[in-house]
Image (cartoon, rainbow, N blue to C red; front, top):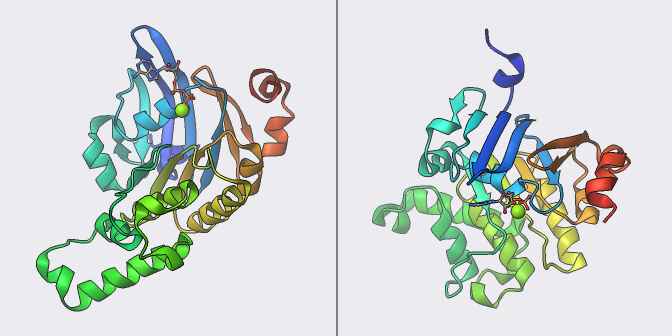
Length: 251
Ligand SMILES: Nc1ncnc2c1ncn2[C@@H]1O[C@H](COP(=O)(O)OP(=O)(O)O)[C@@H](O)[C@H]1O
Ligand SMILES: [Mg+2]
């Protein structure tokens, strides 16, 4: 029997369990993401949000449970490199750009396309690569900053650059952990706008504590607590849920 929920999903987690030396970081986590869906994940510190991303990307292997990508690929049987190759890209909290390279070089270095000497220097492949880099630079709002040293960008701009480096790898699914931590209000608003644009043709999972930002995303919210889903739905509905107020919003 095939499960229609599984086969129509992009990402499918069912009853996932992870323990670290007896501490249960995930205790029966289930989550289904549709193709091209953007989902916001909220929840108190220690809820298991980062561990969930570690499981999806193959960094941590679950003790139990089901993790499928594209309705048919069992991610628990793949390693990190294979999972990245399948089209799952991850942005960690701390930006990891090449500080001494220019902004456009950072994006070019991240391109998935083969970068043999020929492709780099000549012909159609080079033109396509250039166009792709330019498109990404415009999308991440760094076109006017493309020649600057990446290390000289603001914190927010470095985060956008790293999102651009993810896009250069053509991911089907982007996992983004606390992208607006440390950003100014205006950078935060721009990041929500950027992710909404990206979500038009990619699936995105965003973990974030900033409620104004989550509201700006305008997507379904999943609340994690003690390694499982506590509530799920539109932000207005979950934020009115007394259990969510109790464990998270009421702090
Ligand atoms: N590699 C690890 N070894 C031991 N404990 C871990 C490890 N990773 C996470 N944990 C623990 O698992 C729990 C969930 O952590 P985490 O997934 O980082 O939560 P969140 O991202 O929601 O704040 C925390 O109590 C954390 O200390
Ligand atoms: Mg975390």
